[in-house]
Image 1 (cartoon, one colour):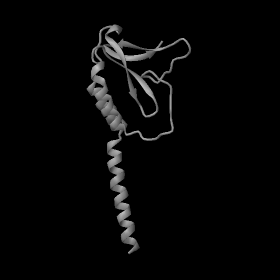
Image 2 (spheres, rainbow, N blue to C red; image 1 turned 180 degrees about the vertical axis):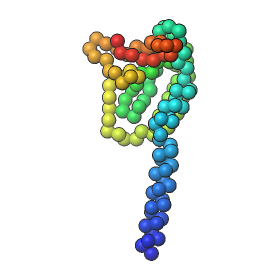
Image 3 (spheres, helix red, strand yellow; image 1 turned 90 degrees about the horizontal axis):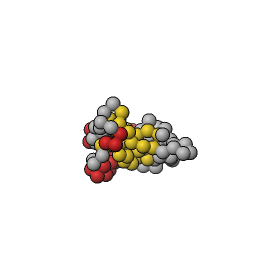
Image 4 (cartoon, rainbow, N blue to C red; image 1 turned 90 degrees about the vertical axis):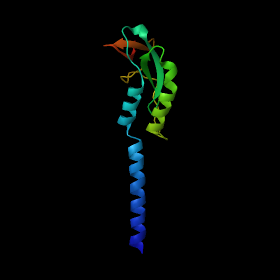
Length: 121
């Protein structure tokens, strides 16, 4: 009888764990986010910043100007995909490369090789 209970528990935990793992793959979440936003540009003025969550804080993303109004539902899907939950981490707002502004600096949107991104300057 004890074996039967242990088997049920093992199967229950295994199937729950797999469902969560498939739902929270950060690479898939990020790929879906990138596919849903427009980053095309010719000059830095073509780009604006939007706030995106990474489970520990805000990452400023550069997107094509005029498309930022379409970003909130895309971001909501991204956050739901990540399913962050409590992590115990926090960082200051950062650019896409992970850099954080020092005193006198800020995060700005720019156009690099025809793609909007964010940098610290």
